[in-house]
Length: 402
Image (tube, rainbow, N blue to C red; front, side, top):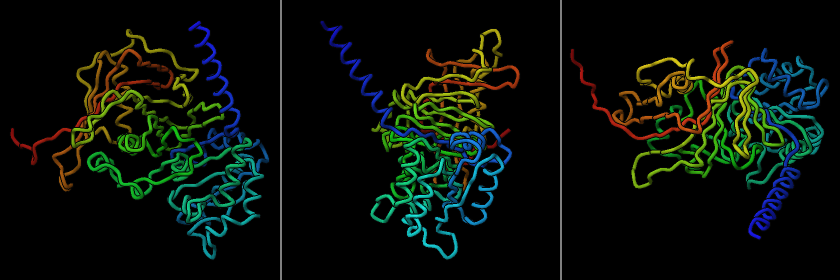
């Protein structure tokens, strides 16, 4: 009897999940980590194809740009190079002789966006996007409603840098340029973070310029403060393509990191930031990941790493875990070795308020870790490495001796 009851519950849950998928957006997102080059055919072609293929109409929003006229023209030219019929939507605070918020309620502009096959948000300042497409009372403008309508019926919404930040329901707004202050001092609502447009849903937090600027650590305090258990950070000239089934595929130059805090804990009795039992994964170009069941799939050219292929290394350690691609380099050394853990530390310079305070990041291979590689390009896919973060101190000024 109990088995029949459980089976009935499972059917109800399955039906509810299928219904949610049916009522969700039928379109796709192409979330680009910034620095998109015009010769990145894989990313541009994917946007055009998802918008309907050759001749697809794509609305270009240079809203975030400091020079929107120039940025709009360049983006339209790039999309046309790959077969789209792109056009500029003149909604931008920095666009001469226009009122961005008034334009965002223009019925003609809203209709042009609604009937397009896709939209593309350029980089710049993401606050300009949310400030233009939402009214002062927080409600949607006509153009924002049109974007949602186009996305729900099957169109594509793409964005690079600032255009990527707006994809989650919470976005970085005006955070410190450096990462460590956020770990040391926490976040301030309305200053460090603010509401995004939420196209990717409520369950995942998005960040960009992720590997090249060492930003993975700044995502952690935001996720804890806002209740996210899943974070996706995308590197430059790289895109995460999110489909209607919530599958994420990485395309382009490099890769992305997934931060999973579902099983993580933090000791709130301690005054400094700390985190235990998180999971960090590196998705290489060609890899995929599902936002619902959190299952990973390596690219078709990847094979599981074998113990016989691993190198013997002494302790794996870096003094600058927040440096350019440092965290991925450390993870690659770890999984291609016979070691079980790697350690990285991070401190600010002597001119900071508390140079003696920093953090230690420990990365450990655990039973659910999976590691793949391809010999052809020496590329790695690394899933579910345990990550622990704890505050540490060092003596300053540093002892100098022989």
